[in-house]
Amino acid sequence: MNRVDGGIDTLSARIAHMRTLTYITNRNGWCEKQKYWQKRTRDIEDRLSDALHERLTNRFVSKRTSVLMRELRQKGTLMAKIEDDGNVYVEDHFIGTMEGFQFKEDEGAYGEDSKILRSAAGKVLSEEIRKRAEEFNQAEDGEISLIYGDPLTHSTINWRGVMIGRIAKGSSILSPKGIVIPTPVLQGDSLNMVQAKVDRWLEAHIVEVLAPLFALQEAANGAKDEEGNDRIGGMARGIAFQMVEKLGTIPRRLIAKDFKGVDSTGRFQLKKLGVWLGATSLYIPALLKPAPAQLRLLLWALHNEQDRLPDIPPAGLCTIKVDKKASRVFYEVSGYRVVGDNAVRLDMLERLANAAREVSMKGPFPMDPDLMSLVGTSGDDFIEIMRYLGYTTKEYDTVTAKEILAKREDAVKEEAKAEEVKSEEKTEEVQSDTSEQPVKDEKPAENEKVSEDEKPAEEEKVIIFTHQPDAGRPRPQRGKRPQGKKGGKKPAKGKAVNKNFKKSAGSKKPKKSAELDPDSPFAALAGLKDQLKGKK
Image (cartoon, rainbow, N blue to C red; front, top):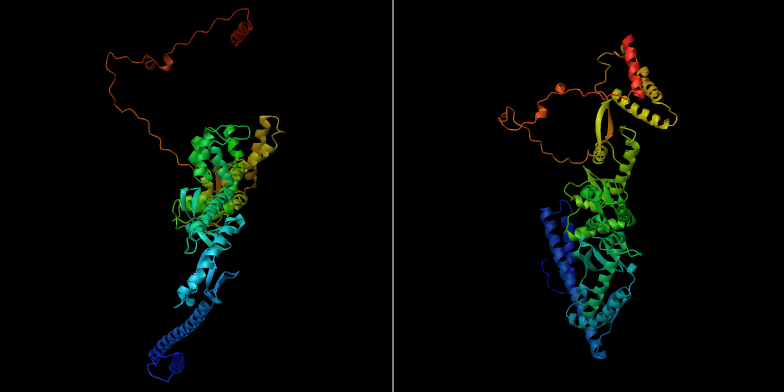
C-alpha cells in the first residue's frame, strides 16, 4: 500500500485500506508502538491523497484539452469573455480573474493547453485593459482612495477597492510620487494614461486635504491679495517658510527671537492665513483634524524614510504616553507636544496655558481639577506639563498653605471691592481683619498638645503653583566677571591716580546756601523759624 503508482481506482482503494489501518492505530491497546504507527499511516495516506488529486486533475485537463481542440478545429478560434465580477472564461472554462489592471490566473486551470488558453484570453484581456484605463482616466476623485498601510510607507492608491499603485518619496516633502503597479497586461499607452491620472489625483488630493498649509506656502512664496499687496511680508514671511517646512506646526521657543521682530501687521497676516499664535506653539488648527494629521504623518514618514513608527495617536485623545524609542518629530507632526513621559495635543496645551494664566493672575494656586481635566492628567504628569508652561511648584504644610491661599482670597476680595474702597487706610484695615481670621479659628495651644501615638505619621503636604515664565526654559550660562587678584601691586609713583577716590564722603565741604530775597515769602518763613528757635 505504500505505492503511489496506478490509476484513480487503484489509488482510491489503497486510501480506503490505509484509513482502516489508521483507525486501528488510534485504538488503545490494539497495536504495539502506537505513536510510531499513527505517524506512519498518516504519512502514507497523505502521499496517496496527493497522488489521487494529481490523477484527477490530469483527467480533467486532458478532457478539457480535447474539448478545446475540437472547438478550435470546428470554429477556427476560441471564444473568451469577462463577466461583470471579473471572472474570465474561455469556452465556458474558468481560467482566472481580473482585479483592477491585474489578471490573476487560476493555477488549476492551466495544463498542457496553457498556450492555447493564454492565446485565446490575450485578445479579450487587452481590450478589457484598454477599456478600464479609459474608465479610470474619466473616474471621479471619489472613486479613488488613499489606503494607509502598516507601516505608513507601504500605503497604496486604490480604485474601486482594488490596489493599482503605491506612494513613494518625491522631490519634496509635499510632493510624493504615485507609482502605478505594472502588470503583463497593462503596458504601453494604457499604462501611461493610468500613470498620468494617478499623478493628477494624488497632487489634487494632497492640496485639498492640506489646503491651509498650501495657502501659507503660496503667501510665503510672494502671492498677492486682491489689492495687489503681499499676503505676508517681513519677518512674518520667514516664520511662514519655517512652518511650511515643518508641515504647519512649530514650537514657539524655536522662533522666539524671530517672532519678537514681527510687527502687528505681520501677526495679523499670519492670523488671516489661519495660523494660531499660541503661548507654546504656532500651528494651524485645521491641520490637527484626523485626516490632515494622518496625511502629514505619511508625508513626513515617506520623506524621511521612517518605516518603524509607533501607533498613530487615536482621534480625540488629549494626552498619550510617549514611546521613548520614537522621534519627537513624530509626535509634533501628529499634532502633539512631548512633555516628559506624555505628549499633549497642541490645542489642549494652549487651552491649559490660557486657563492657568487667568488663575495665576490672582496669585499662587493649588492643584485645580478644572485645569487637570483639560489635559486628562494628574499628579506628577500634570506637574510636569505645568512646569513646561512656566510654573514652579513647592510643597507646603497645611497651615502655611492656608496662609498663602488666604492672601489669594484677599486679593480676589480686594479686586471685587476696589470700587468701594476710598482710602488706603481702609484697605489696610480690611487686609488686617482678613489676615487675623485664621488665627481666631485656631485652637488654644493647650488643646493642640496630644500624645505621640495620636500624631499622624506623615504631615499632609499641599502643592502650590507659582507662575515664573522662565521656569520651563533652559537658562543660558553667563560668564563670571573677572575679579582682581587680592594683594595686587600698588600703582607706581608718578602715575595718575583718580583723586576722587582719595576724598572720603565726610571730607566734602557743605555747599553754602544761596541768600534769599528779603522780599520773597520764603525769607519771611525763614525769619519766623528763627524766632521760634529763639523762644526755645
